[in-house]
Amino acid sequence: MGKIAVHEFSSLDGVVENPSWTAEYPFDPKMGEAIGAITMSSQGILLGRRTYEMFEPAWSARTAAEDPGAPFFNETRKFVVSGTLESADWNNSEILGPYDAQTIRALKERLDGDLYVSGSVSLVRAMLADGLVDELHLFVYPVVLGSGLRLFGEGRAPVKLALGATEQYSSGVLHLTYGPA
Image (tube, rainbow, N blue to C red; front, side, top):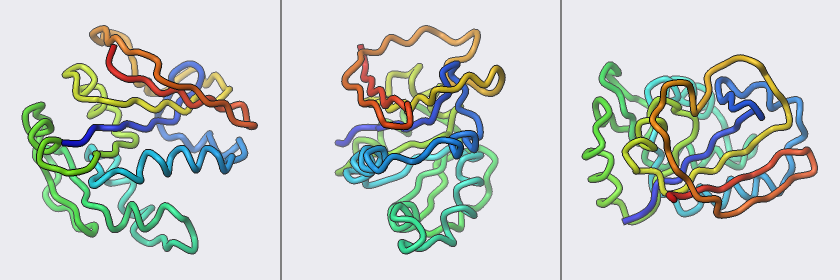
């Protein structure tokens, strides 16, 4: 049984929506190494419907020459949590159905490696509430956006986490790794 490792880009005020704003910051190769370390042990990618619909056209046409992450996203098995998606045509994709904690637990138990999650805010919120996230990797950018979808929004049940590691990059981005408290 592997672990579920979540990766999110966040502003200082917790906005994780459409991280196109990260383009203003130089991508530190050490940050690429950190993200690569998260994906390296993963045997599957777990995605919510909206993230799947954004990732599929963005990644399916990329090659390793264009982006070293392309083989991981294109060749790794993808599990999509959705009650509305009718087909998932991107290579190695499977629809799991609507969110169900038991389905995610069973998937986690049957895979030999880890599950990687990026984006998928609704899915991540549900998994955090159900205690399914083993590692939460927040890459926090030194910007306050003021509005947008937040991972930890108003009205959510408290989630206690324990800080496991920190890393700072030359761009001012902090990589904070949390696990269950």
